Image (tube, rainbow over all chains, first blue to last red):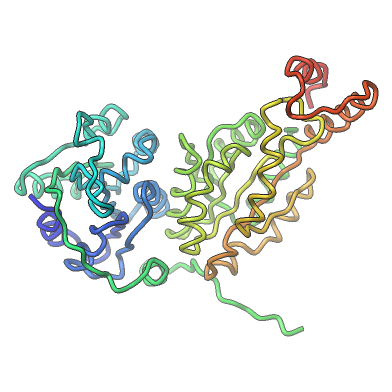
Amino acid sequence: MTRHECLSILATLLKDEDLVVTALGWVAGEWHSVRPKESNLYQINMGMCTPLCLGLALALPHRRVIALESDGSVLLYLGNLTTLANKRPGNLTVIVFDNQCYLATGGLPTATAGVTDLAGMARAAGIRDAYEVRELGDFEEQARAALGREGPSYIVAKVDPTGKRMSTNIDGKEAKYHFVRYIEKSEGIRIIGTHAMKMD
Amino acid sequence: MRAEAVEAVVQGLKQAGVDFISLLPDSDFSELQRRVGDDRGFAYVPVSSEAIGVGVCAGAWLGGKKPALLVPTSGFLVAVWPLTSLCMAWGLPLLLLIPYRGDIGDAFWLMGPYKDTTEPLLSVLHIPYVVVLNNLAVGWIEGNTVFRERGRRGHGDLATAAFRVQKTIERQSKGVARCLQESTIVSPSSNFFKKRDITTRLPDL
């Protein structure tokens, strides 16, 4: 099972208005290739994708928020599992593509290549709906279930240590403006204020 | 932190439009933390690491909230990396509130290094900040424009208020007085037990 295969399935399950945030690494380009929407935010720094999605989900509880995480990113701030479990955002689904290595930086193994079980840790932290999947059919089943229920849901997808280096053709700041303007438009709110130049 | 100071900060936050607060419990801000945790006017997200708090606040801002992060001086150091790589790199505004520790007379020996690091680090990171004395916090927070106009910028997106609360001021003056009496200088390396003795004899402000 590859991450790109999973992403291709996930893209068919989402609505245009679903907010999707990707971690740094090849997942960003791969996701852009299958669902290039302004409701995507790409390349959030190591460890920050799930915390950012937690804040986003709490700010917009009526919108589905999906975090596309990696094992290396999650391992950097494991304490966030406890925050996620206690705040229980019902609209948040976290999908961790666990390739058991730091692929984008040379492929050295992560802790999940050893004995560490991320789904088990998530359950122990208090996230009831935390599951590990290894087959595409199971991924689709769990993703569909997660998107249809009150969350948070946590899916650890064990994927091959391979990927495609694909470009999003936009940097983070540009993606931020697209994303924020989309939220402003779809929510009818103002997030980035206008610049008023005082002449006197 | 005295009740009036807590209320002043809370009112300042509200007048600035802050509606989302993340924090890791800290002794200096404990009363303030309880107050904001009980206030339904704030979405409240306690975290296990200040770095995580930065990420949570960043997401809240993207969703239309106006976030603030309450961090101790030590936690500011923990938060520096995501402040740099997320807030500053992406241009995501965030208000930081940091208790001012480690000044002359601060009786806890562990606080000394934070006096040496907090303000210089804020300067190095080009984070605009003010040291606020007690109730002046209201005016500063209310008047800051971090959320109104800085959403576009990269470097100036963060604003920081370091609160030198009344309790610290009192400690400072008493600590200086004792220094003069004993002709010694209280420094971060001074004897811990002597400093603790000073602390225990101070009135609970």
